[in-house]
Length: 343
Image 1 (spheres, rainbow, N blue to C red):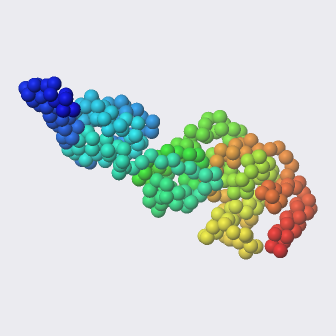
Image 2: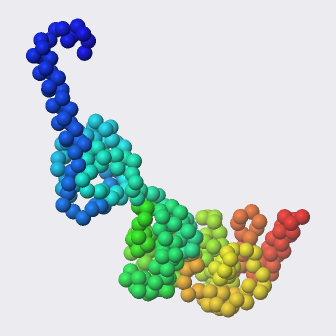
Image 3: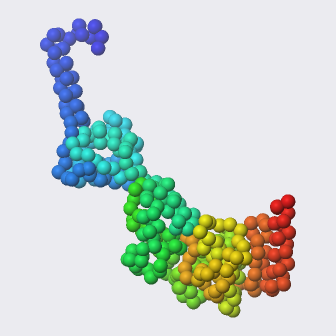
């Protein structure tokens, strides 16, 4: 206000203006900075959902009696400029917190934020345990232990020794520090949502249980990353199973190695385990990783072919053969390629 404007007001008018100004400041301070008390155990856990509007957040805070006035909170949000800045997360709200301090909490945290986490095709429980620790701060040991806990698995309606294979490959959103139980249930729901009744009927038509489908799919994923090649490899394994021929699948041996994947030796093929498909006919007891939809669909809808053998071609794919003699030629060709790589 300029000196000239001051001179336009009488002393009485100036006092009135200043009084009104200070009253508004005091009311604003009381409204937006005074602590709001709620009658709940503190801190109170409040979840802001992905994409939730500021109006919805305000309404739920009011319904939970965390704030006494929706209007005041909205005004505070407008003044603070936070209506579009609040982040999806789980917050722990302390008691006796003002509107502006609450808004600052929603904008700057601390909180358990909503994160995206992806289960990649062919990821094992061990690798997934490391990923949930890194991406969403879940204890990896607790996660893996729960995924192999018989009572917990039974509570999901499954009669399998481990959830390997049942945690579906896709991208999920979950809050940091989610419990291992909740995380596993989210991943398992991804599988049950995908493996619908029509796929169950298809498996039944092929004479396969869900566990057998996942087991074979996990082997196929272990053999190739090429989606177009998966139905052909599935056809090979279906052909072998029909005639009682051993699968002789390298990924099942790799699964048994304690230190991860490496080039196999003849000694590795003698490992004593029901997962050793070089020693035992039929499918192993369960999946060796968590396969994605492409490998699962390849098992359910395999290519109809007469191939019984395949070997890597050095270009990321495989050469297929109907006879053992033809297969040996492909093996020789691959070995030449390997030798050239080592020169």
